[in-house]
Length: 290
Ligand SMILES: C[S@@+](CC[C@H](N)C(=O)[O-])C[C@H]1O[C@@H](n2cnc3c(N)ncnc32)[C@H](O)[C@@H]1O
Image (cartoon, rainbow, N blue to C red; front, side, top):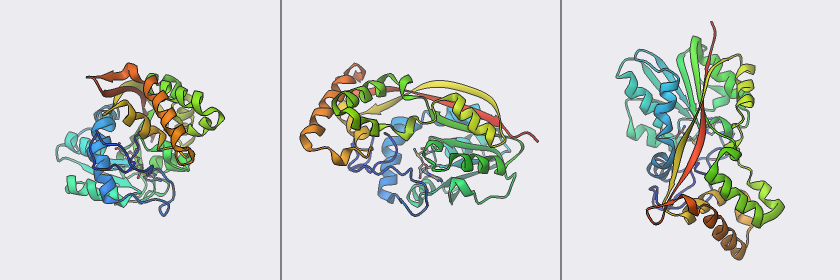
């Protein structure tokens, strides 16, 4: 899935050359190179994440004068959007596990404060932020409950937490078709393709996680965005190569699955080659009551 795999040259139209999701839990298990983070910023951010950042910032009600934290900020698209909205009045901090991501974030916006750290142990005092945001991050944390407790802890009384997560796989027309092709051609092994990406799509589950962290859910909105790829092959390869299964497929099987899945998403081909897959996601806001 679009999660920061290393790409050959960067850019939305280039395919990842390794799996290399950056979504591992412990600080020492995975660090993305600066080159890979640059590729994430040049490719995946415009191809998928950029359109969700203003939606999340808007849903969480970020206004000038506030202190805002972007947890799992990656290269900082949400933090940048929040900073633009604050217009110089207030404070924005972006936090990520990955130094490479933060290097790119800092190159793009030296005026924002970037901190390395684990979402499960935020390096901030209780009540430090009016708004705590997390886009496309929570599903990858090994201890989601701890991360939410930390977000609640660093939020001020009366403050807000805003999350963006992807919807369930069953709600994804394009990715659903792709996964159905994987399942048809790979049989039981395809269950390993179950991606963390869709793991928080069940709103009731996500709501109960927030409530268990002591937060009160104030709103949920489901929106559809677009995941853009240079070709159907690129779309499928990006997904397939991000799974543990990829390394175990022989070349012939890989080719066969790729062809079948590319065919399955052919209804989403536009302009004679590019692919635009609809992708449904949730924006969930919660309050920390004082
Ligand atoms: C899909 S990216 C999303 C990045 C960014 N929010 C965006 O919208 O572009 C997920 C990010 O989560 C970060 N991450 C994964 N586990 C983390 C953890 N335990 N603590 C902090 N960041 C983490 C990764 O380094 C990566 O930058």
